[in-house]
Image (cartoon, rainbow, N blue to C red; front, side, top):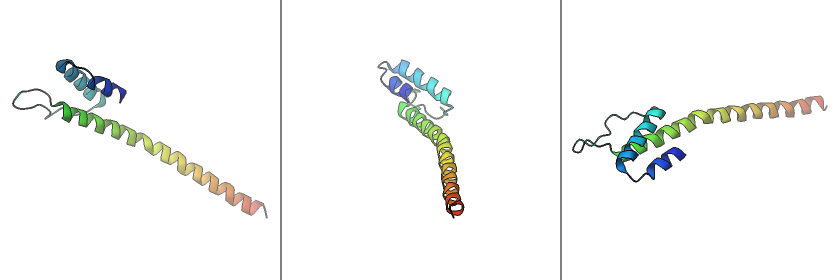
Length: 89
């Protein structure tokens, strides 16, 4: 995300476009149908939106690990509570 923020701050359009395309390729973002048919130039808004979506997908793909750890901790906690109830008698 920091990389995208740095790219957006580039003033020269050609350099910004090249950096956006490089980042898009790095993230595996499709760059098809992003060019304006009248000018042939890349529509930056479309590429930026696709890059944001790629970052969101990466975050979502990592969040299942946190959910799994949380559920395992809940099972351990429940098992500990049950053991205290049955062993404590």
